Length: 587
Image (cartoon, rainbow, N blue to C red; front, side, top):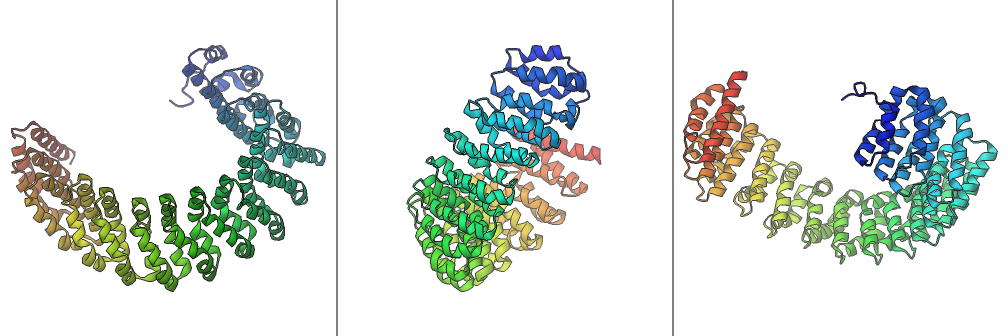
């Protein structure tokens, strides 16, 4: 229903519904606030609806969350930006509730409204609100206040700006860790609005307090501040103030802080620039790669290629590669998996010789890892290595391992290999594919696991799309059609599935001459499951072949199947005949 057609609810009905015991009614009422505001008009919305919402003390978080969201887009309904300040009181109340997601949404809505308010109104209404929240008795108000400073600060007078910086500094030293956490989280946004002169003095002293906080949850948020502040400071100030903090954090006693450094390292490197990265951050990164906590090693391993891009190849080989070798046999499978997901990118950084000498042995050991995810992460990125070392070397070194995985005893590993075959085929080219991988693709059609057989049929379709119908006619279709005589009906069903998938790729001519006769012969099969699958395949072939072929070949087969003793065969055959009639009528 469009907004215009909605019934215009009077204020009395809204008030009744907002006080109703049924939470759904209360929620619906809140979500219709814009409709109600339109019905009331701008003046009554300001004088009646908003005060009522300010006093509405609903205790359900879902209703409060919806209200916080609605009020954020309410400026047009109260008469535009000159009246935007009337929306602040209800949102101020929502900034003090206990539920975090309601407070966050209220802060978001306040920021949205504040960013549209006129400068004078910000000074008269918004800044006093921020100051009230920052001085709130209950910590929730002070937590919310931290997220509003970046909106309030730019329009303040010099005196007010000094006061706001001082208030923010107090929030960073608040007794409650939750408030300090919020101050640390929002420091980057606030710092971006502060003048450069005060940035070096006031903001940096606030930042230093946070980096020495006794709570690790505050310190780890200060790590993000490093990157944000680094982008605002001059390079020399960044090296003087931010770099020592990063190096200290990389040795912090809390693994969560070290984890954050490992996670943010690339951004931190961008902040301090290439030279300090090479001299100071390389040792810090090596420490993180060898950290005694697996989580830290996972985060560090995931950034290894990005980090190497900043360095020159010699430094990467000298410092990072020994750690990578250690990580490739790490005791934690998740560390090895994180490494495997990015290590292929190192080939582009290190160049051909170093990749062949140093990286290939690591790739091979990860390809033979006992944990499937590690092996898959390597296979999915083979194209990056192919670009560096060329197809011949890749086939000699890595292909035997891939063939081994294709016959792995875990069916999920075999399945993953099948899914990567089209990718490998496109990277390695048709000649290479025919020599090494063609026979495997046929072998999978007769796997003991249904998911493998189904994926193998899909794989043939994707290969036919990749290499074209002529190649498929030569290398796929004859072998597939031979298998229709397999004594086991489940394998015959897989071939029908493959025909169904290949037909649209092969086109009308090959479908009529090669595929359709095989399907028609299969309609005489003694197993009902085969026969009703034949009916489904014939139905799928109707749009592909000419109308004359449908009438001459497909319809007679389906008529025969529609008289079969088996109820399912009759059902699918009748369904296919109806599809033919439908096509006839529409054409």
